[in-house]
Length: 305
Image (tube, rainbow, N blue to C red; front, side, top):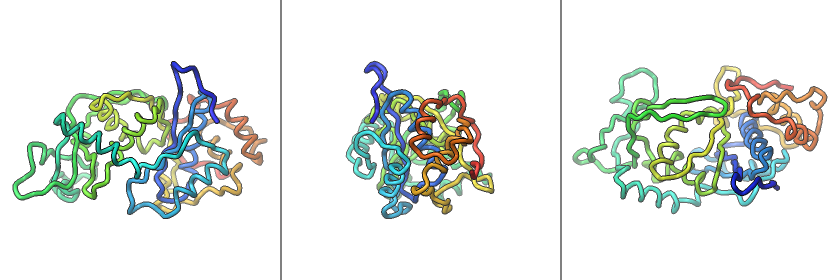
């Protein structure tokens, strides 16, 4: 269990995986980084299951993730939160944005947006087709939130100062999908605020999502936490290691080896004498020596050990 910091500055971190498969070394790196950052600050470390994409989810994956965290000695504070049970809170936020004229229904499909956009292989940027009303004869599919041309700035504790223009990077983005499920961007903002998260430590693949989430925080009058985006674990082709690509899961029966690799990947340089140590010894060393400033901004392949 955690030791609370003074009430004026309580630290609350979280680990929020999607249940699309077993934990691999990439997701373990994120769990370790967020866990250590919370514990060295004497704060709480929460676990939230982001299960808002049923077609991609694997039966039993969430429970296996939790058992793996336990095997690695990462015990969370409080109850595990499941986003699939939080639709009422997300609906309330969407209704507020509707009342304030900050969101609108959209009839466009992803294919239609792609066909309107010049070929170039870049991210899809919504052109605002439905911003002033649905085209004649079209029915709403999703809900989008208004964006603008004002530069949005924030400083990531690992990646440095960032400047974003949402109108040029994504346009008005979806906050409720065509399938009826709430989009990740809205759900994560509501849950981080509701759980009082003070710092978000997560993978660098979500760095581009951060400006959208800060935009929603400001529209809803919510506090913006600190951000620290960890480097990504890459495969042999230089791509992000992912559960969808059948990345090998970490072995909960041999947690020490994988924990050592994660600490080394995060730039903490654990002594070679700890390569065969158990998780209790490794955590004791890591909690004494953890320094966020030593985490490299750029990822790569972890040492196989």
